[in-house]
Each structure stands twice: as C-alpha cells, then as structure tokens.
Image 1 (cartoon, rainbow, N blue to C red):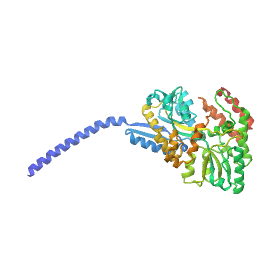
Image 2 (cartoon, rainbow, N blue to C red; image 1 turned 90 degrees about the horizontal axis):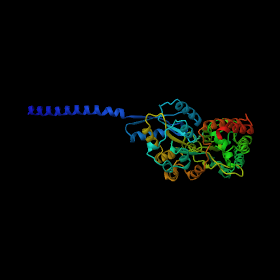
Image 3 (cartoon, rainbow, N blue to C red; image 1 turned 180 degrees about the horizontal axis):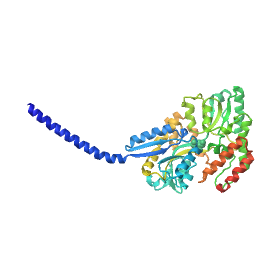
Image 4 (cartoon, rainbow, N blue to C red; image 1 turned 135 degrees about the vertical axis):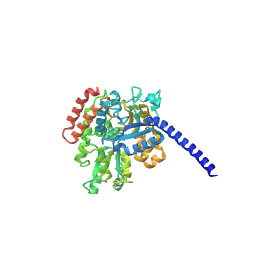
Length: 432
Ligand code: GLC
C-alpha cells in the first residue's frame, strides 16, 4: 500500500514539478514582452484650478481599464500665464518628457504654429475634423481645430459669471444687477447696511494675470466692440471700460488694492463671507459649496455678468483642452488617453465633482449634473455666447501687454488713456 502510495505520490510530485517548471518558464517568457508593453504616459495637468485631484482619479480609472498603461501627473503653475511660460520652456527645448498637456483655450493656436502639439486626426481615425468636433460646444470645436486639423480635445468649458450672496440680496430686497452702475448702487446699499468695514461690494481680477485680459475686455465688449486680428482697438470704449473699474474702487465698492487680486483671492474672500458680488469662473461654485473653509454654502446665486449702461452683457470664454506633445514618444497611446479624458463620461464627472463646465451641451441637463449645479440652466447660454480673447498665434504677446497694462491702470500707475494708447501701439503689428 505504502509503496503504491509512495509511487503515486511520486508521480503526482513529478507531474506537479513539471507543471511548476512549465508555468515558470511560460511566465518568464510572457513577462518579457509584458515588461516592454508597459507604457508610461507623462501628463502635465495644470494647477488646482484645473482640479488635478479629479484628473488623477480619471487617470486611475484609465489605468484600470487599460492594463499595461501607467499615467503620471505633473502639476504646477497656479495661473494660466505661468503654465504657458513653463510649457513654452519645456516644449521650446523639444523636451520629450511630457506626452500630454493641458492647455488654456487661448493657447492651441500658438502651440500648433510653434510645432509643439501633434494633430490628432490620424490617431483618432478622423477624416472630417469639422463633423467630429461638432459633438462639442462650438467655441471648443473652433479653438481646437487649426488649419482643418484637430490639435486638441476639450476637457472642460468655462466662462466668467457673477456670483452673489443670495442671503444679502434678499435681506435688502434687491435683485441681481444687470448693469455695472446698478451693481455699484446695490453694493453700496448693502455695505452701508451691514456696517462691516471688511465687506467688499465687488471682487474682480486686477492682478497682472491672464484673467486681467478678460477684465480689460468685459466692459469693452459690453459696448458692442471687438478686439481681434484686423479689428482696431476702439480707444474711447476701452478707456470707458477702465474708468468703470476705477469707479468701483472710488466708490468703495471694490477694494483699493484691486490691482493685486488674483482669481484665487476672489474665491477665498467670497468664500470667507467678505464679498457681496464676485466675478469668477465655473470651478468657484464647487468650492463655495464644498470647500472645508466655505462660509457661504447654500447662500450663493449665479447670474450673467452685468452690462455697461446701454450695452449688452458680455463674458469671456475660457476652458481647457488636452493635447499631445509633438515630441512625445508615445503619441498613439497619448491620443487614446486624450480621447478618454474628453469623453461625455469624464465631462459629467468633472461637472458633478468640481462644477467644471461640460463641453457637451446635453451634459448640462443631466440630472446628477443639475443636482450638483442647479444654476447650469443659465450657464449653457452664457458659455454659448461668450466672447473670445484675440485669436492669434502671437497670443502670448497680446496677453503680456494687456494684462500688465490693465493691472498698472488699476494700480493708478498709468492713466486709462495712456494705458489704452500703450496697448494699441504695442499690439498694432500683432493685431494687424
Ligand atoms: C480660467 C479660464 C481660462 C482663463 C483663466 C484666467 O481658468 O478657464 O480660460 O484664461 O481662468 O485666469
């Protein structure tokens, strides 16, 4: 019996060890190509305002669905122009470290002209760029197609809105203002009534950041004017716009050091309960509702921006796109990731978790999206009619001149007339 058992056991052992050897050998062979098959994609994903925390979650999801692909996230640059400077240095040096880049809506034209970003058509298998891009809101379908080629796919949309304290407006029986003059009057009433010397009527961006280009253009556009290549700057209208902002400071509605205020300052001060009206972008809503420091949860209303007297409300189109670096060594895999990041599924996730505005019209009316952002009914027409900052491959120059000059005017270093003359003369060649 023992002998048989031993024999049997020996036979089993033999079979098992053969099995072990075979499996080990197979694994060793299989592991070789597997190790090589692992693709690592390096992504520059912006700063906190682009919600890199949510982007990371989407990368995790992508990794789960695509075994063999790892995605690393690099963040940096608190503001759009700092990110542009950083990427210009990296890409200007033809550095191949980054595969995928997040770009502000103002940048694809410059990056494509410089040869820094790769057309995606062939990777997406797209023959007709126009019809493929028609799934997105028109502003992005336009900004991300250059010379008939898809050079980026939209991540999230954006616009400037007027955030206001519903509780304070209700207390004083006033409606959200439709003109800047009305906003000043309403603010003064609330500020006087509240007797709180720290309460600002209006916070907007006067620091020399990218957002100050919009600050310059908002009241200018509102007078029915435009500033694009081939359209000359209407100087009296531009001066009137700057005078309007300075008037807000003179009336005590905006704070004296408005020339130092950045996007995040407005958000933080509004969130702390120190501001009645704030001009800001879509991401701010989520922070007002869910940030651990917010004191205004449930008290915030959103409206379209007021107009100049006799003019129309006008806002600035913003938003972010994903593109593939022309120097990437993994373009096909990078384009696949970009396609996922620009999908309706991700768009919905960003809207629900971060109030980042959808790039698909139908996502605005999704029930979960509306639950998190009850004001999205208003947002869609605002985004659809928002205006573009000058569209040019030399946008970096436009931005540098307009934002620094605007901020200097708000700091009263230069008079509005001199500021506008300076902008016009410095940019006349670029804008011709
Ligand atoms: C927001 C907008 C972007 C704009 C920036 C300015 O991020 O989406 O387009 O340039 O703000 O600060």
